[in-house]
Amino acid sequence: MEIPSRHNLIKSLRQTHCSDCALNPVCLPPAIDEGEIQQLDDIINRNRPLARGGVLFHEGLAFEAVFAVRSGAIKTCSSTPSGEEQVTGFYLPGEIVGLDSIGNPSGNYGSTAIALETTAVCALPFDALQELAAQLPNLQHHLFRLMSSEIRADQQVMQLVGRRTADERIATFLLTLSARYKRRHLSENHIHLPMSRSDIANHLGLALETVSRIFTRFQQMEVLKVNGRDVEISNRQRLKEIANGDNEVASCPTHV
Amino acid sequence: MEIPSRHNLIKSLRQTHCSDCALNPVCLPPAIDEGEIQQLDDIINRNRPLARGGVLFHEGLAFEAVFAVRSGAIKTCSSTPSGEEQVTGFYLPGEIVGLDSIGNPSGNYGSTAIALETTAVCALPFDALQELAAQLPNLQHHLFRLMSSEIRADQQVMQLVGRRTADERIATFLLTLSARYKRRHLSENHIHLPMSRSDIANHLGLALETVSRIFTRFQQMEVLKVNGRDVEISNRQRLKEIANGDNEVASCPTHV
DNA sequence: CGTCACCTTGAGTATTGTCAACTCGGGTGG
DNA sequence: CCACCCGAGTTGACAATACTCAAGGTGACG
Image (cartoon, rainbow over all chains, first blue to last red; front, side):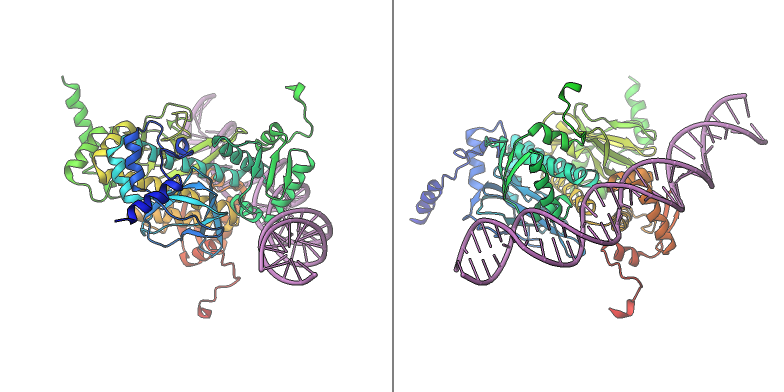
């Protein structure tokens, strides 16, 4: 059989082993050993990259796998009873998409995942992952941690959307993104937004015009430098203050 | 030693075995067998009931266990960077509190759980639960499902708080509560709210005055009968329409 | 060079929050 | 037993934040 070897060749060309992967520390359990990585590696499917706008999975389709983002970015949406779409989350490299669908009573995906740009993912078939987790306590624990983090992230958004002003929402959103960039050892002050203003607005419960206006205003305040989807945080301290609702008119650093 | 037997007596008086528990189908994995229930039962601690206002766990305390609500009701809050409290969830009998704290990087609880009325809980020490889950695939799967449900619930609240009007939020909130009552085989149309208007408001991202006004208005519209914390759903169909944003002026059932 | 997203900016509006006064009911203490 | 107090809830008046509608502007791509 030549096909397997060809398959392996392609795999290696794409540098697609967990042990080689630069995202390894973000995505995998911390205390996992070589043999365990191999076992995990064996259940992973690495499909071809999705083009921008491509659908990774669709609400209502049979749930089979969760996905680790390798490169690019994903948004997840779910449709409200009244038919509109709600952007429930953004997923960057090293993050896991689809955890919300695991226990969906219908057995289907509960949301739709769409690529915001060219995006590569690792598919983790959930049945196999579960079996493996029963054997590898580290992996089981890691999965619990991941899901728990997702819960905390969602609760933070709840908080954001429920009780904070538009300024605070945007500031917090940018700081959160920045922290996620930093975790991947990228610049924490120079962010390229993979999503549109409209996606941001939808996710934060704002009108897209409001998002646009606030970006402009933050730029006038010299907190950000905005150029389309490139955002530079020029005054991180001030951005943090805004995020925390410190709306004092002037900077009074001596007054603390 | 007499203490253990006394302890057992108390246990049996309180009818505190999973196998006897009426909430069994809500709380436990569906396909679990007798022996497995026993194992689970053995790791559970049943503390004395909490009085109203009692703290089950506090943000920042070392995370040790998650809790199944046996009777009463719990709210969870987390404090925002700016110091205010946000009510992140309400937990009724059969539901599990504390899942958001499992993977908290600090190893502490990430929120505070407070009893809304006299409340009894079963403590599930998480280390033991995890070990057991590795042996019982049903239990492991059930835990994944529970956490996943929590994610979906939070996303629903996100949606609610982000994109829906105050009327829609209240209507949806009541319908969700109603469904949770029904699951416990209680009346789905007669709800006793364990939480204050202020808690509801906080959870839904509204001012408490707004909640109060909407309750009054829904009563005038003959959708609800409200008497303090007792709420009767008198026109469920209409309530659903409101929840879905169907704000047509009059009822026109023939026009469908 | 035109088209099509995506984004920005402006004007007017309205839903909801804030401040404030008042009611109701339960529990406590005189 | 009654008066009082306190927390919870209700209601009203007013203000403001953010939405809607509308009209351009900009950049990418054919």
